[in-house]
Image (cartoon, rainbow, N blue to C red; front, side):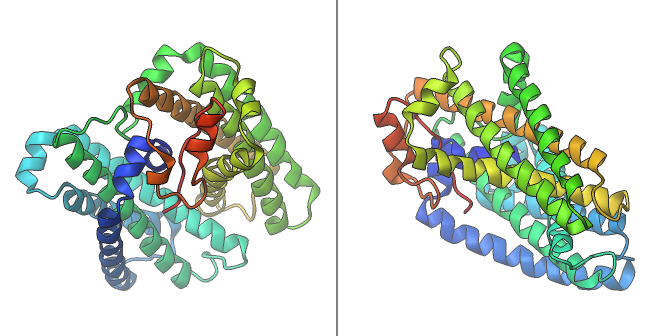
Length: 349
């Protein structure tokens, strides 16, 4: 889900995919695949045992592959032969495999875990959760693939983007800044594991899972916030940027993408434990491993986002906050810059 954060946190990308015309087209792109996914669900229900988690996830992943490629083509606004010539098979394989199948499966597990958390267990009542898992993941995949396609189209028209949301820049950062990243990831692993262990003091599977989720999300958001400042100013102290930014702006970034995506990743991990490993809840050992991995990943991703934001600033890509459609952190850019620190723009939309 790093691509999702990059599309909203990095100003150069966020501005392009939140223009009014793009948002209107995106609504249609999300609505049509949702209807198609419902039809596919009804047909698959007659032919396949969707009450089996593996079967459901395979169906959801395959639907997401077709959705991702189709929505990307709409975002690119050109014929397939041109896409193959200009983008290459490697990009399309990444799009179908990662943004399609892997992302679709993750979102389906997220939906199933959320429903389980509120008492609607897919293993006991498969029809409703199965339908929602397929449709919701399909619409989200369509949204993101369309945005990536639109970014690619604009890039080919001559507008430069310092970062394309395919993970290439992350791999480069890991190779070149491993020593700077290691402490952040290590802290994330420890903090997440400790936070997830708190669930053992609560009775009941749902209650324990809720405590685990709350702890991992809250602590993960905090680690993500600090790691972002570490990447934003790698040659200076991250605490300097933290103290120079208003508390209200810090709260907004802690909430999104920090807490929101830490919670999302933990729910995906919880869904894997409950529905793929068939555990009645989330045992403490599993919770600690999952919580540590999630918080460590958030530290890595947000250090990367801060670093890429710094790259955009160096290349003259800073954008006025008034141009960013951002329900959670509107104004964060201008206010933080006035204090000598630049924060990212974030949005769920």
